[in-house]
Length: 87
Image (cartoon, one colour):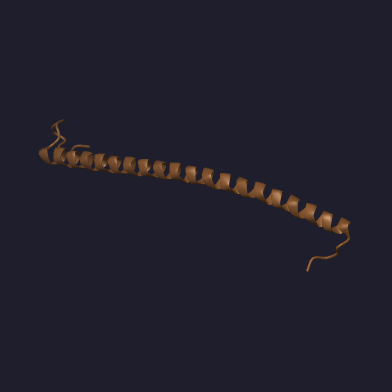
């Protein structure tokens, strides 16, 4: 790893290169952690939005079913009273 074969100690240049590499790796790690945190926050927002939309969907389904029952009931009453087709 070290350029000087006669010595087991790294040169000043090698130490500086290693320090720079460590700094770059630390910087990359911080950036990756920030991105991961941001992605997690976005994920939580999306889950909350999904929950809200699911609730609205269920409410609309309930409203639809109730309205459909009322319409069917009205049609049945109209048919049984002999009034014919609505215009």
